[in-house]
Structure formats: C-alpha cells, structure tokens
Amino acid sequence: MKTLKYLAPALFTLLLAMSTGIFQSALAAEPAAQININTASAEEIAAALNGIGLAKAQAIVAWRDQHGKFTDASQLTEIKGIGESTLAKNSALIVLQ
Image (tube, rainbow, N blue to C red; front, top):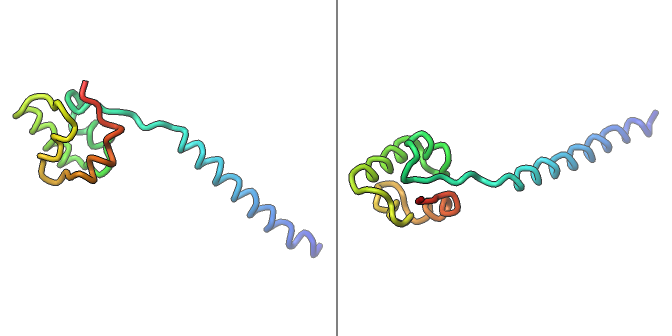
C-alpha cells in the first residue's frame, strides 16, 4: 500500500511531462498562415499578425487605400505604432502578392 502511495504521483508526473512534449511538438509543427496585406481586410490582418490589433490593422488598410499597394513590407513602418520590431516579428507572415 505504501508503494502505491508513492507510485501514483510519480506516474502522474511522468504522464504530465510526456504530454507537454507531445503538445509542444504539435504546436511547433503547425506553420503560421501567411497574409497578403495588399488584399486582406483589417479583421484578417489583425487576426494573422502578432502585435497588430484592429486599430493598427485599420491603419494599414487606410495607408493602402491612400498610397496604393505595398511594394515592400518595410513600408509598414510608415504607419504610426508599427516599428522595426513588429515588422521583424511578422516578416515571415507577410506577403505582398
């Protein structure tokens, strides 16, 4: 009975540790979807890009409406609140065509 008292928590801990690794590898294997900032809506941009909320996404669409299509992702830094670090976090997610 004493053995079961110590064995049950040990098995639980082992299973918990193993399941964390399984979920982590499943998440890492899932590629993030790219988004075309020249055609996407503000809602789609906000959902797809890290650090971009609806207000900044609306600013991206407004910039696009005023200046035309983006020809380079670095043009996003012309929008207030979007800096180099935000661009770097999202560079793999942004497409222009």
